[in-house]
Image 1 (cartoon, rainbow, N blue to C red):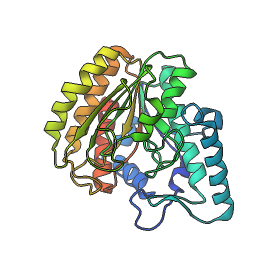
Image 2: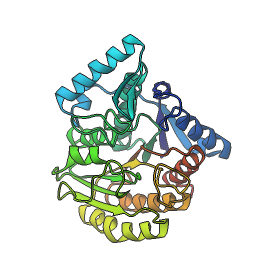
Image 3: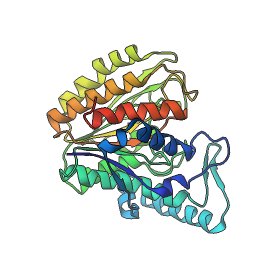
Image 4: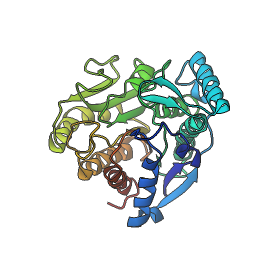
Length: 312
């Protein structure tokens, strides 16, 4: 079976302005690098459909989902840009991008659960893991991974899924949505203290949060994963793993001060694949989160995909 690669042209139309690190060129850098190294031939490319409000409401409140869609419709109609917070701006292309980003995660889940693919990567933007049940923040509007995880549970009837978040920033939105949902185990590492200045104290017993001091390098992070994530995942036995794949902990990325390199992302992905094969038939859906140094991002995604596609 193949590794699916989901994206959509609309994801490049979300543009928060010159100089903003969460830029359309992130997806171009990934696509260009995969083509340059020949990894594209190992992937099954798919174009994502748009998520529906009903699907979004599995992770977000009905009020938030409706109000956000209305606001983004107004921005689209006005042709102007509107700031939701100092870092998060909506432009005329944001609504379509956000709906297709969530839609990619849902479509990937459908295909992987059905056994038509072993795993999938969603090269989408805007990212999602800072979007809480009721609030957009940190470049995020809808929480793509949380929506997909709830889709697997509520639509496909899975009993246990894991969410693994390896972004340099704490996935506070995902934690807000799934805290206390014992059907979900969330494992994450993140630099602390760093935006959004949360996560040191987990909000639920279904969380394995690993705060990492600035300037920590890959080997120490691997040790923490071995000690904290892997035993929890083995005990939980997830039937499917969802990944919030942030690559901004790379040592070349100035959004944080951690020292990860491509080999570390390859190692993490390999450990997750091993857990998924033991307990979930190999089922993994990974969604792009952070990663803002374009070259480092492209190389790190390629390292992640080589393992998913069983080429490393």
